[in-house]
Image (cartoon, rainbow, N blue to C red; front, top):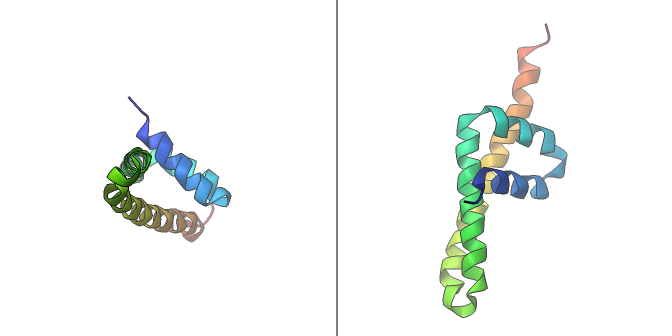
Length: 92
């Protein structure tokens, strides 16, 4: 079985390499982030699978492309919030 969490995180890091630390940190500690990342990993895998089918998979590939785009946006918003949160809490 494929590791969809790792695949999703890898996709995010490719998109935003400067946020790698935050992405990896969230993927280890935040269940909601993990779930969305897994969804992204599954969607990316499905997208590539349908894309490989050529014309026969074109419509489904387009659907999964949009799903991937939406999940990436959601995850990047999550990452942005996580980067703000620690600063707001102050230092001990």
